Length: 351
Ligand SMILES: *Cc1c(COP(=O)(O)O)cnc(C)c1O
Image 1 (cartoon, protein in one colour):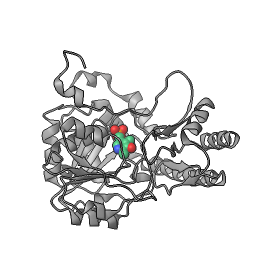
Image 2 (cartoon, protein in one colour):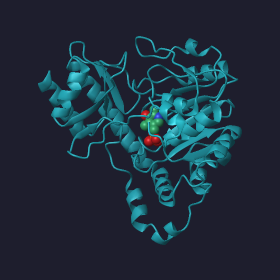
Image 3 (cartoon, rainbow, N blue to C red):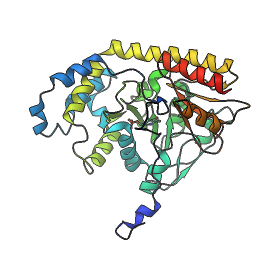
């Protein structure tokens, strides 16, 4: 605390991102980035980008990008919102929908940014516990609440809910906004976008950071019926009128247009995930069923923090959470085939 700071800064509990070490070349399997580069179409856009355009402010409405996303997801333009990374979209959504009298609900083990936004916006929350198998129990979300947010697939467990379960959740909570955070949906879960027409309380959030290999670009989006999108616009236009810069727009449009490459990368990651899960099980690890681009795993006889340290010493970064219930687990991002092999070899020699 410093005497110049606003009083409320004391209360904040900022997010700690996964390590992004600049000192050494690690095999980075700790922040769920895509192991493959963005589409070649993206390189071409950057090469051909008209630099003089940067003189101008970008389109505050991001109309072209919104139209492309709407068409990709079979939605209308007013049902789409874009922001500077899905973290920003989520922050706006917490501000727009979750400042209610009743506490909001999200699983005790999920994306650790959610409690950070709750602190920032003074939102009270409850944390229904996942089962021993790390699955969500829908009954936990049947009580009165000010809103619900669930990553699907969940992070860091990788476990997905079915569309049927999400429909049930939406139908059981008609008075609350239910946010489905689909950061990893392209790796094996079904998108809830198909439920938007049916449920006015549904907000689906997605990102270009994971399955589109564009974490450095900072682009996230949200899909919902028009009134919820309008709420996000109101917050956005009270915060930053130009969250999407012109180069980001052009790059995102190119990425959306290259569907073949997107599908190819997605399939490769899924294939590698299944191979890695098999290899880990052969080494004695318990691997939770993943629908994402990472696996959540633990070894019955080995301390996870020690494994994390030994892997780091061997030049491989994985994610370890010093957190109750999961402090004996590792979250390992799916890398290239070569990176996965290096991981398995390193674990073999550690064990
Ligand atoms: C990575 C991630 C995000 C944030 O993605 P950005 O678009 O890069 O801000 C949001 N939610 C979950 C669950 C994530 O894992």
